[in-house]
Length: 356
Image (cartoon, rainbow, N blue to C red; front, side, top):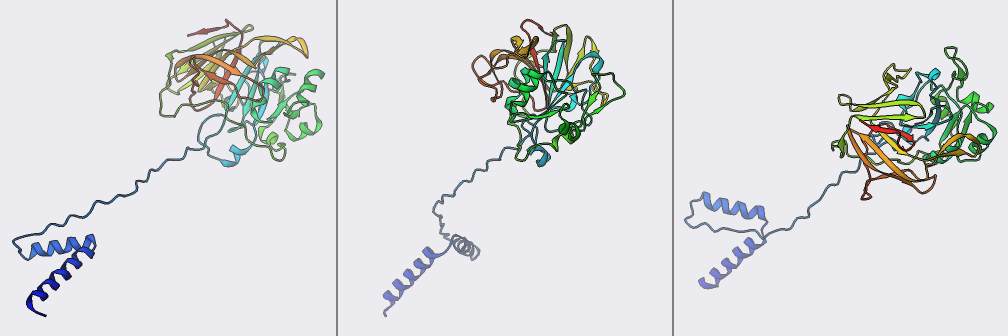
């Protein structure tokens, strides 16, 4: 092979080596050329590469359905809702357990009010005083997915309605329920304000296959500020019972009083409080079980006032059937968002609420 052919072969060999090397070897070659003091440094530009961009989406944190707070115990989160009918006669105060219920509905009855306290993420031992149910409970509480219903019993017509509903009937008039739910009479109270039970015992009576309730409200993110007008709270007149809710900024909750007197919880000794107060303006009609018993109409629509985080949001409540949760929206149909935590719902008559 003559000198020209050898030169061409060497050039081809070097070109092949340069094209076939990796990016790393090319960088090394360039660095070596520099270190040897070459007067002319060839710059090798690597071809552009396209890398797939991976976007990580954080899965939503599982929350308890009735508070919107993060789940801390999976077994508790999976259990059914337990509704306890709690007395609100003056002789029944202070009650045990209202401060740990996820949701409390306050209903007008024949004499002022009574509570339907919905327990799920927390319980109360003991809980009470426990009183009778009403026909309005069947309509109001159907959205909690076959809840356990803990009550003292009622007249034949109400009893027939409760037994015919999808509730798990835990009545003090039923012998089996009486033993299993831990009912007892307190010697610290006069009858009929002396009946108590245990939520821990009542949950053991849940039927096989019982499941958790669905979410009832929509919540804002924990780090988001509430939307609405600044308001300190509300005063309500519930058929002669004066109720005051006042926002406490230090705790981020609303404190309850009755006629200017703090309404305390017997178990903790603290004033009853909640993160949200909803005033549902409803119509009351005579109950079909007793013409003297008012029955809140909770299927339909009406005005709603939502107090949360020191603000007031005005809107509407609506509901198409007893198995659907109550929807709360603003004038444009957007959902009204609550603060994650406990909620009280006041079933108030029209023109009985004063905003403070």
